[in-house]
Structure formats: structure tokens, C-alpha cells
Amino acid sequence: MDLQTLWFAAVAVLWTGFLLLEGFDFGVAALLPVLGRRTADRHLMLRTIGPVWDGNEVWLVTAVGAVFAAFPGWYATWLPALYLPFVLVLLGLIVRAVAFEWRHQSHDPRWDATWTRVITGGSLVAAAGIGAALGATTLGLPVDGDGTRVGGAFAGLGWSSLLGAVAVVAYSLVHGALFLALKTDGPLRLRARAFALRSAPVGALPLLAWAGLVHLRSGTVVTGVLWLVAALAVVVTWTRVRLDREGQAFAGWATVLLASAATLFGAAFPVVVPSTVDPAFDLTVAQASVSDYTLGIMTWVAAVGLPVVLAYQAWTYWVFRRRLTAEPQHDDAADPVAA
Image 1 (cartoon, one colour):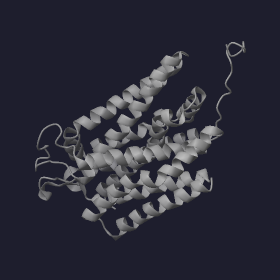
Image 2 (spheres, helix red, strand yellow):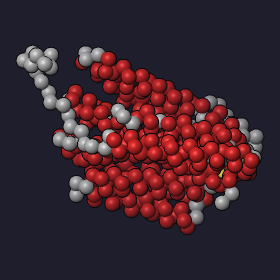
Image 3 (cartoon, one colour):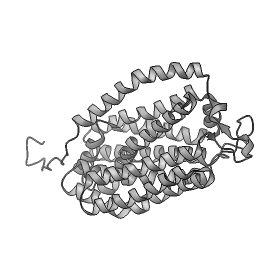
């Protein structure tokens, strides 16, 4: 495998890792008004992602950084054509991070409700923006032979970006419900499991449609098999949820994303930005890449640093692996300790 192909695979892994880890993070936050019927339930939901949400976002920074460092031509074509969704992603992530920090600064119910809504809104906006950007990138952008966007600020947004946005949000909602079923106990666990049971087949359809379209356009037998694996994983997930096997269901749902992402990136290769103006304007890995010398240096740096980062994040998940339960509710007037 040459270095250009290796780094394309690395970028694919980074984006997949981000969607896999931040996906349940987004999903839990988006489900706060749906499953968080009591204040204690909402606190419990946020406790499940509290130790990991900011670490999960590192995958996004690394994915974008890898594109910039290894494929500057890809970055230069991609970002200007999709300024709007990326600005929305940044705004969503910023207000979401602020809300996580400010929410616990006061115990006033209105303060709590306000910042809870901000967390939910920021998460939905960020998830939709990332899905829109990836959907438009894999299904085509209106760029000319110089990699310049053809049209106005909204020219890069169409049905493909809408499909990507819906796919990421729908997948994240089910992913978050399965994560809650796996990480909590009590009534919240039951509600999360019921939500996942109802929503899993529908939640997978946009993602499967997205991957299927890219495969039909430029896929191979291998990507076709991967798409079938993703579809089969949906069935496995649903049956495991029905049998109350939350761990197996979570693994099955993760397989849906892994196989779908492999289909998307595998079918797209070696094109990194397909052009909807003219196929002759498609940007390929070879055209977008830096020199082999630079890729070689980056490979050695990644070989040293990446295992350390992965080990640290794995350790974090291991430390916070236990199920959580909601704190008991007290009448503050009758309980001086709670008061």
C-alpha cells in the first residue's frame, strides 16, 4: 500500500471513529427532552457522557487536521465549498461546550432547563452540519477544474447534504439510546431500550441509503458486501435489543456505522471530492496529496503518538465502564441534608 492510500485510509478511520464515539454523545444530548422526564433522569443522562464528551471531539480535530496535512488540495476545495455547514458545526460545538460547563453552576430550575435545551440544540446542529458536509462531499460538490465552488454560498447544499444530515442525526439518536441502555439502570434504561427497539430500523435507513448511493455510483464487489453487512447488522441490533442484550445491540449498531463508512470511503476511493459540474473535475487522492516525503514523516509521527492517544482514551472508557443510576429524589423542605 502506497502512502497516499494509507493516509486516505487513516482519514477514513478518523472520521469513522469520530462518528462512532461522538455519535452516542450527540444522541444522548439530543434525547434529553425525550427520555429525561425528571431532573434526576437528565442529570443521569449527562453523567453518562460527562467523562468522555470532550475527548470524543478530539477525533474531529484530528480528522480535519489529517485532511489538511496529508491532502491540502482536498481541504482547500472542501472547506470553501461548505463554509455554511462547517460554521454551524463550530457554533453548535461551542455553545454545547459552554452549556456543559455552565449548567451545573446554579441549581435554579429555569437555569437548568435553559442550558439543557442549549446542549440539545447544539448537539443536533453539530451532528446535522457534519452529516451535511460529509454527504455533500461523498455524493458531489459543484466545483470546477480549479477546485472552486460554482455558484453562491448555498450551492454546495442540496439533497445530498440533506441526506447526510438526516443520516447522522438519525443514527446518533439510536446510538445514544443504546448507550443509555448499556450505561444506566432503572426506568431510564427501560425507556432507552424501548426507544431503540422502535427506532433502530427507521434510524438506519438514511445511512444505508447514503452508503448505497455511493456504492451504486462507483462501488465494487467488496463495497457491496460491506453494505450487506451493514444491513444485516441492523437486523442483529434489533433482535438483540428485543432480547435485552444491550451490549450486543450496541456492538451491532456500531457495526452498522463501521460497515457503512467502509462502503462510503471504499466506493469513493480514489476520488476525494467528486464534481457535480463535470466528472473530469473530480479531485483524486493523487491530485490532493502532499509529497511522499512529507507523508513519510507524518507516518512516523502518527506511529508514535496515535497508540498513546488510543491507550489513554481506552483507559478512560474502562475507568467509567460501570452502570449509573439516578440519584434519589428528596423533598428539600423535609430533608435538611438535601436542603
